[in-house]
Image 1 (cartoon, rainbow, N blue to C red):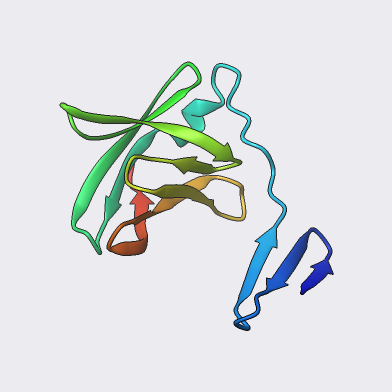
Image 2: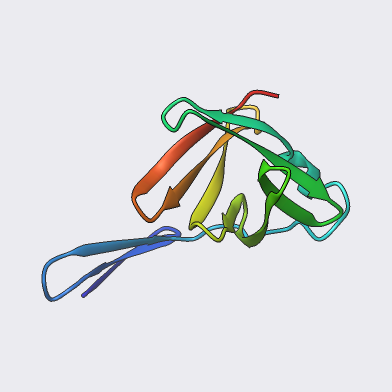
Length: 116
């Protein structure tokens, strides 16, 4: 069964689980400078980890160490796929990027805050 709303819909499975879908803007990092808005240093208190997001042209890259760099594949506005799992950036009321959340095999929505 499906329930439709403004810009979203829900699917209710035969097992009575509800799956919610929401319309999102497409990923638009096809011009120089658009990818740069994600660049910076991020820290997770929860994971006690620091990572850098680099931008070069239209490429966005997650850097853990100098030898550990992974390209982020755009999926939708502020949402990317990584080798670890999905990553999405968060914005404040002024539309500035303040951090991101990443889900990996054993943890969901691990928060990283932009520190620089």
